[in-house]
Length: 323
Image (cartoon, rainbow, N blue to C red; front, side, top):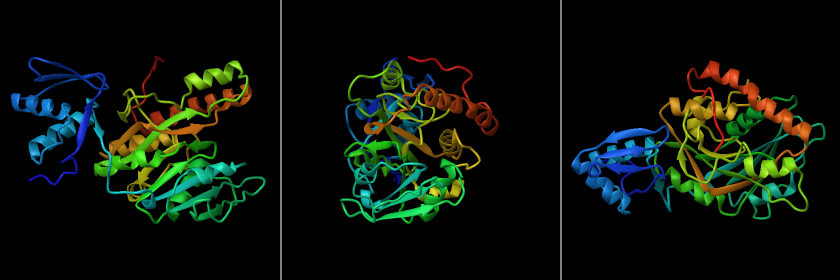
């Protein structure tokens, strides 16, 4: 009898999945791969794609794991071992904390606001409108977003931690759509889709570009996240993770002021943890639309390539094309 957490899971085919030779040859995923299965395996895939749960057998669990890891299928989960009360939200901020943010994260256990040495110290209420306690930590010197997140991580007492940037606003139900994915005990981190805050009034060309081609919006298809695949990273603008797993890995690399989220995701993958992107959960983001600030941020993103290449040889794609 298998004790794997995949038993009972339901899956859905990735849009790339093709089956040939009576279902014994599967092709798809990212990067594109070909997988051969036995006739018994093909019948199991038939049942899984028809909506049946993963049966309690070692062979079934092993095949399902291969399909998930290859990005040929994705989990369908409606319930899991965690609720919002198992989550602490960490908000790193420098400069301004929009009042709406702390009231939009949901009925979590606690919110930790980390003021990374703002010129004008951040002030917060003691509780949200829902009664969630808010704790404020202040850095006396600027450490950067990774260091601010690590300060929050050190103070978390719940099994899960969510990181949300101050320029974000979660849509209702975002956590409830992410938490069930932790039913798979190999999943260490899950992330929502980052979408632009809906514009009001006339928009500049740059604002319209960001609305449709934001570097943070990874599209509408679920994915297993790993280097050199269709979804090779998820941004730290919003993500939820297992607290102890992040602590074991040392949290974010606070020597990196940009690219620290990519580095974390790749370290998790290298440590044999799974990272998943779940676009049904959405967090709105206030994009930079002033030309100088936009160009500076895009330049900053580019400067992370060298550090990532040194830390993860072979993981950085030499060229990526836009669809």
